[in-house]
Length: 207
Image (cartoon, rainbow, N blue to C red; front, side, top):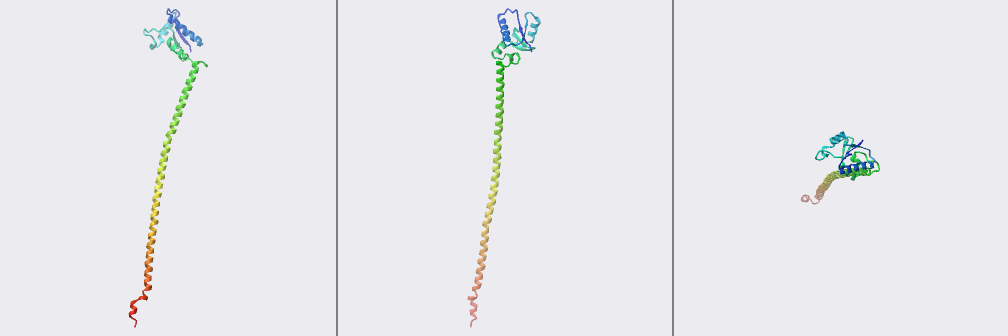
């Protein structure tokens, strides 16, 4: 990838010259390879620059001023966007280049990656905890259903126990009836035994 910097070598504007020098000096300090393209002495360079700067990035008169920066055919920005990237330690991202190891931008990218992974891990743990928490009511419902089943079984056993008690209560009543019959039979037998001794009719036939 080649960084292209469109410059005006014979610009009469002091401000433009200062901006161009600032961009070039900073790229050289970072040891970024770039190709300077003069639009003052080369009409093709001027035409290509004006054609490839996005319409929304052009000034009101439609003529973009140098310096303009490209990565191959991709537009990076003008001096203002370059300056903002420099202030944010994101010049490599601005240029579309990977930051070299050990640079501030590389460290920031690494920290951002760690934070994203940490956030993702926390979200995953939260989802797992949510899944575990949703399982609890299911267990509780199962416990309630099991408790209702046990209660129903206990009610049936209680009903059977009451029926058995009633049956046991009926047995003594039958025993009492048998005892009453036996007592009546004994009474009749006793009367039959006593009757000959006190028979008034036998006395009537005595001389």
